[in-house]
Length: 232
Image 1 (spheres, rainbow, N blue to C red):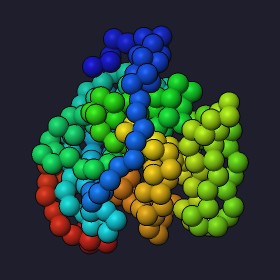
Image 2 (image 1 turned 60 degrees about the vertical axis):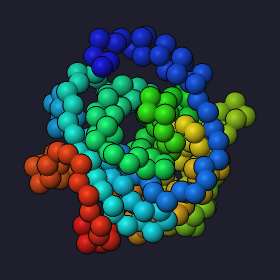
Image 3 (image 1 turned 135 degrees about the vertical axis):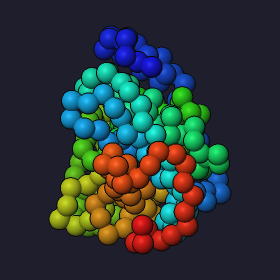
Image 4 (image 1 turned 30 degrees about the vertical axis):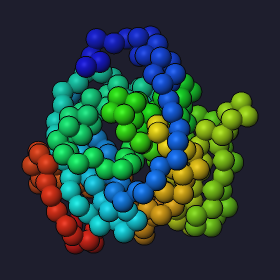
């Protein structure tokens, strides 16, 4: 999909896509999904996974797994070009889309406001949130070492995300709106997704599922389940 793109092409597309961003309040959220990618080092095969949970109960409902071949290189700020095509293949397997999707990466917390969550959200026309493990851009004020504490991340006076402390004595995660959802609601939703780990449940569980897919423990396709997270 993007294999013939240069980084200059990719930058131009990000700037064009950013003009399509919309932020609005979501109503009646009952399902939330996590999305993540796994791959073997130096391999062109992307293993994509999307896990759907009930919200706010965090009960596993279904998951979709698919592979995609890409030679687009990894470079900070361009994650969407490597991961979004694979995630869209998994997304297409899902008959009933979740109300909101959380991606392991950034939304508008990005130099060009086009992290992987914004990139995916626009192409799929889907409410999306970015929840990253590291900060890519912006001026960060570290939140207090108290669970659920937050600190706004700004760029040129604009709030582009939040650092969220999910666990004491542990690095925060970085939450930002991707598309079709507000910053404030993105943060509120992610607070309700915190379990016993640093990484909120939608992307934490997806990370485990997609690694099992990569190692052959799970098969490609769309799979319905109905089990508590602790039993999966």
